[in-house]
Amino acid sequence: EPLVLTPRILISIALGLILPLSACYRTSSDPGAVSTDRSFLTREEVQDPRFNSAWDAVEVLRGNWLHDRGTASFRLQTEILVYLDGVRQGGVSFLRNIASTNVESIKFYSGMDATTKWGLDHGKGVIYVTTTAGRPPHQ
Image 1 (cartoon, helix red, strand yellow):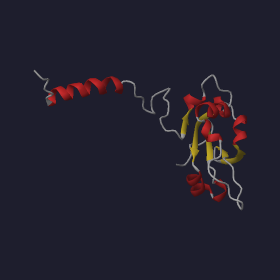
Image 2 (cartoon, helix red, strand yellow):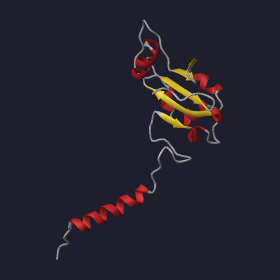
Image 3 (tube, rainbow, N blue to C red):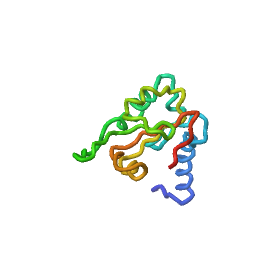
Image 4 (spheres, one colour):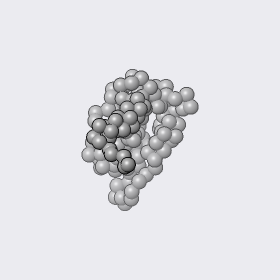
């Protein structure tokens, strides 16, 4: 006799699959939470004991942030820029000067978003670092 999948059986199967998975989900308000946003790194991620600097964390966790994407303009030379607590610092190598223990969060802005926010010379993107002493970025 064939198995009949009634709505009650289907709901039981769905709950049996969903409930165990939901126990693995963390919200960003949880201590030690890991960001699911690929353009953001949390304090907990950056302050991992493996990392001495913001550069170390970004290189391991979001290495693609460190490399230019797209074509360059002949008239307007741009690079990925780093901001620290709202102040422009320079290129990505500046991340080596930021101790990971001082980082509250790191956010990557795409070239389009960075250009909209900061101007045409930000066409390669921005890595915005907020320290424990700084303000959160305006998003």
